[in-house]
Image (cartoon, rainbow, N blue to C red):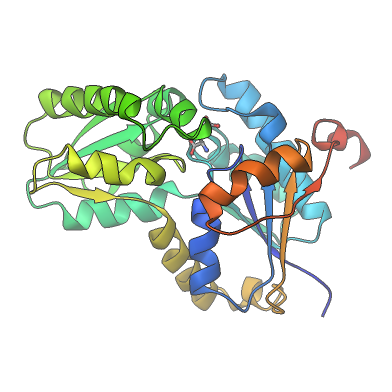
Length: 281
Ligand code: DGL
C-alpha cells in the first residue's frame, strides 16, 4: 500500500497536543502533521481568511495522499470545516474526509454536566463563530452555555510563559469572568489546542467541583471510533507507524518550540508553498 497518512492540521504548534494523543490511541497508522506557523495565529483573523488558509492546507494534505484530515485547530474547525465539508469536498475530493475537533468534545460535555451549565474558553475567532454554542444547543437544548474569549492565552503559551507568575493574572482574569457570567458552570471546555499547556494553572484557580475538558484524548478516541465505523476510509489509511511533520515556517523555528507541545523532539520539513498551492489543482 502507498503512503496514505492521516493528516492533522493546525494553524501552528497547538495541534501537536491532539497529534500526540492520536498517536497514543492509533500508533499503527501513518500520521502527517501540518502547521501553518508562517500565518499563525488564526484566532484573530476573519472568516474569509481562516477559510482560505484552511482550504489551502486541506488541498496540500490531499496532494500528500491523506484520505482523512483532522482539523485540530478549533479556529479552523469553527470557521471553515462546515463549508469545506459541504461545498469544497464534493468538488475537489469526494472520496476523502475532513473532520473537526468541536463535535466530539461538545458531545462529551453535554453528557457529563450535572448542573446543565457549560463554559467555553477559546480564541476570539472560535467564540465569535458560535460553533460550540450551536453544537451544544443542537444536541442538548436544555444546557446553558457561556463563552469567554481568552486572547492572551495563546501568546502566553507560544512565548513559553505558561508556567510563569505573569500568566496567573490572565488565567484568573478569564476564569473569574466566565464564572461570574454563570456561577452554575460545572464543566469547562478548553476550546483551543494551546490551552492544555495552561491546564495545571487553570485547575489551580478553580473550585473543586468544576471539571475541565481538554480535547486531545477525546478527539483521538472519537477518531478511533470513526475509523471503526467507516471501513471505506480506514482501509485507505496506511499503517506503518510513520510520523511526518511539516511547517510553513522554517524548520528551525518549528523544531525549537514543537517539543513543548509534543513532549518529544521534532524534526520537521519546511513547506513554503501553502499559499500558492491552489493554482496547481
Ligand atoms: N490552534 C488555534 C485554536 O485551536 C489557536 C492558535 C491560533 O489562534 O492560531 O484555536
